[in-house]
Length: 320
Image 1 (cartoon, rainbow, N blue to C red):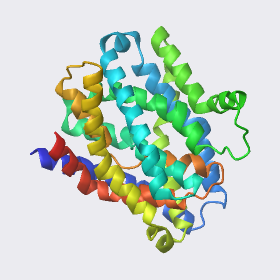
Image 2 (cartoon, rainbow, N blue to C red; image 1 turned 90 degrees about the vertical axis):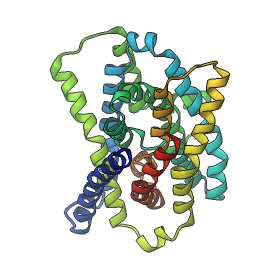
Image 3 (cartoon, one colour; image 1 turned 60 degrees about the horizontal axis):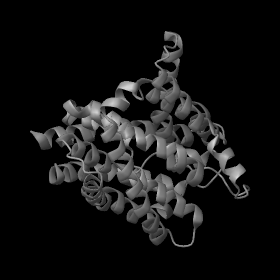
């Protein structure tokens, strides 16, 4: 029964993702979209859809009640993700060689899975009793994702001098602003007018479909044979889907020991459920908005999502 639920949830999400990729692919191949569609859609993601998604998430979940009742879970999640990031950096350098841009893409992909669009539906399907804990668990991941990873790994910094002032400027991006505004509203308990909250929610819900369409457009415009023969695609996928769930399990033991936490079963379910997901979509979306070549990143996303149908049930069955 457990394996059937896992497989059904994984297949359902893969079908949805695949259809969105197909729409983008057909639209690009059929010349329905203009030449700069990929970059335009990516900018919409960076400046509108992702900020709205993050803002809505923190408005609804980052509340005083959450902080007071689940601070241990938040601290645990933050500690584990910091360990994962420290381990992801040398692994990314190892598989990417001397290419700094590819190294950043790999670092992001190993450190942050698709814990939102795929992770939450998976948890809701197989562990509905833990879905609220999972949402809380991912809040530090959202913060680290958009407070550090996106501005420093994925956004174009080729013309930015390394200084404290420019570092602050990179942090003051629309995504981080949305996070901070959402957190302030959530903690303060400020009630926004219903049309405003519904607009934020609707814009945020566009993020994943458009991200997968961008992946499809990228796939349509690249040399598929060349990209899929790139060893980094498979090395990153192997690490993300099989090695890093084990790394997360080790980080679980380390952080619970250091913080003297006696975790409930939901701690482990949240951790492994998040770790088992494929590479995150932002490794394609954000760099594309700056005109970067995202073909290898798109290959990683596609291959890891396709193989996750097999690895997600395997990882969850082993560790849970």
